[in-house]
Length: 376
Ligand code: GMT
Image (cartoon, rainbow, N blue to C red; front, side, top):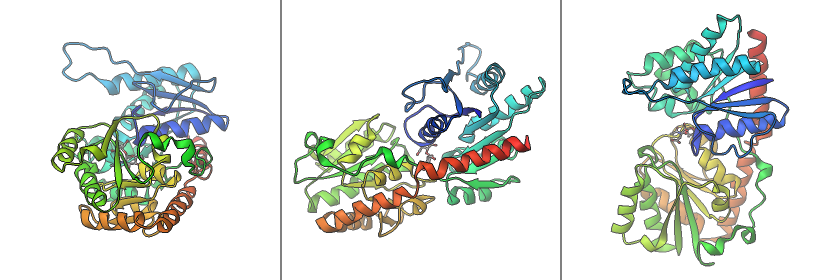
């Protein structure tokens, strides 16, 4: 199948899911065309059945806002015609589903009928898309997609609650390539570069936005380090990094907290981590938690959104109410203070992650593509 994947090229979240999906599909013989404004972060090599088409938006002084949707839909039309694309898969409703719909309509004028699958990822529904300024366009784009998927049951429920949706939403969970990750082995991990042998390594990875409650990460760690010798690795960039650095200084724990910035080597960091913190306000799935778990890192998270579908309470980690820093610190310590408990949780985290293996999930998308082509 020749498939065009539209996504954001950024670190983490929907962009990573879309890129990993495209790479997996290409290995299964499909021809994948990524269409976005920059080469996706995890798209390291282009091959004969993986192409990247950059959307360019020329600057013009008249425009206060440059018309990205227009450039994207035009690019889609050109790529579909030039490469004989059979299906569009757009990740993140805003503005990709909207631009995809326009492309479909333009292509109809050339007698080309192409189905569009839209995957909802979270903030396109729960934070941004729900805003009254966007809601009519997001509702329209979802209802006019040929197939709609969401990355968790929780996101499906939120979508049906927040929007007037006529389309069926199919849940296709996010996934991980389990075979890519070997069982944890400290010797491969260069742990010694990051911490002393007797220190626990606690990790947080995100885009450092308000929704991630970065202050809570620091506050939980503050309580942990009082009882257990430990270090905190803060991986990622975003608006909440500076306030978090300030808090770290105020709490006088600067020598124990490392802000590593954005990284292409998340697995290298996770392979020597002992515990992962994800105290988000909302999280449609929590791919970062799954990436931790596959690296045998137990997760302390909130019980919001899709997190309970990924992190199993008392098995792969613990879940608590949003903002309950004390409970999260207590659970973290209950895992870290006993080496047998820690080993048990590490093993269990990995086992839970294996349920999300890419080989179970990618065929679910292929099945949707086949149905979309039959219906077109
Ligand atoms: O986590 C973010 O803020 C980025 C965001 C995105 O759209 O890229 O992530 C969303 O999609 C991910 C992939 O499906 C999910 O794992 C995240 O939980 C979701 N983020 C939120 O719902 C806040």
